[in-house]
Length: 417
Image 1 (cartoon, rainbow, N blue to C red):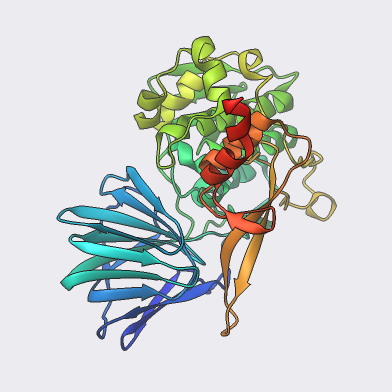
Image 2: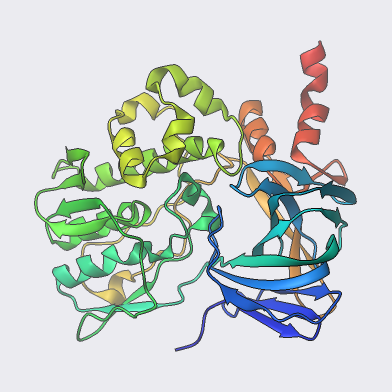
C-alpha cells in the first residue's frame, strides 16, 4: 500500500513538507541544521501529525495566510502581507494556511513577518517548536471492499466517517472533511487497518435494503454514525431516539443533513474562526441556543439539540444545496457507481462562489494566494457574511484586498448616509 501520510523530511537546514496524495509541497528554511522528531503533542486544532525541532529562525518558503492564536486556539490576530507582529513570554499557535495546512506551536518572545512570498519566524535564542500538519484530501486514499450483502454494505458505510478530521462544528468546513474511503465490490468484507474512525455514540437504525442504505450514507458520514438494522430512527446514547418515517425516509435524511450542517455553520462562529452570521442573528430568538455553550459540548449532545428543532423553523434560512447526487437502489456497481464526485454540502459562502488563484513557483509547486469573488444573485447580507469570515485576500476592482477592508469600502458610504 502506498504511504499517504504527509512527508516531513530534513535536508540539512531545510525541512521539506510534501503531501504524496495531492502533490502539494513547500519548504521551511532554518538558521541551523534541523532534525524533526515525531511527537504526540496535543494541539487545540485538528492536525494529522506533529514533529518537534529546534531553531532560532524559520522561513516558510511559500505564500501563507497567518493567524496568531493563543495556546487554546483562541484567535488573536490575522496577519496581512508585509506585516510584523511580536509577542513576549507565553505559548502560542501560528496557523499557516499555505500549500499544506500547517501549525507551529511556539514560545515567546518571538517575531513573525509576512510577505507575499514567505513567512519568517524569529526568536532571540534557539527555541523548541512543534510543527503540525493537516491533510486535505479531495480523493479517496483507502478502499473498503464489501460484498453485495446489505449487512456488509452497512458496515462499509459506517466506516466512511474515517474521512472526518474532527467532530467539532468546524467539520462543516470542506477542509475538515477529507474524502471518505472508496468502496468496491469483492468476495468478502475487508476494511484496511488504515481506515480508522472516531468513537461514536450515534446510531442510525434502518431496514437493511439498498434504498435505505444509499439514502442514509451522506448523513451517516457527517454524523459519524453507525448503521444498525431496525425501524428507521436515530439513537443517541443518553439523549434519546428520534423516529424517521419509512415512506419519506430519503427526504428525511436530506433534511437531517441540511439541518446539521447548517446549524454547525452557525455554531462554529464561536469557534476557531469567530464571526456573527446574519442567520445566527435571525434564529437567536427562535432557537434560544447558547451558541458558545453549544460549541463546547460533545457531538452527541449538540446533535440531540439540533434534532429537537423542527426543520420548518430554519428551512427559510438553509442555503440552497449546490449539487445533488441520486443513486438507484441496486447492487449493480456498473450501473450506479459507488462514489458521487460532486461536493454535496453547501459551503460557508452561502451562495457566493469563489475562484482560487494559484501562484506558480519555479520548482513547479503552487500556493494559494487569494480568491476572486463571483457575485451571482446574492444579497448584500450574504456577501457581507462571506467577507467577514474569508481569511484570504479578495480580488476587487483591479487589486487584492481583505474581506473586512472591502466591507468598509462597499458599505461605509451607505452606513454614513
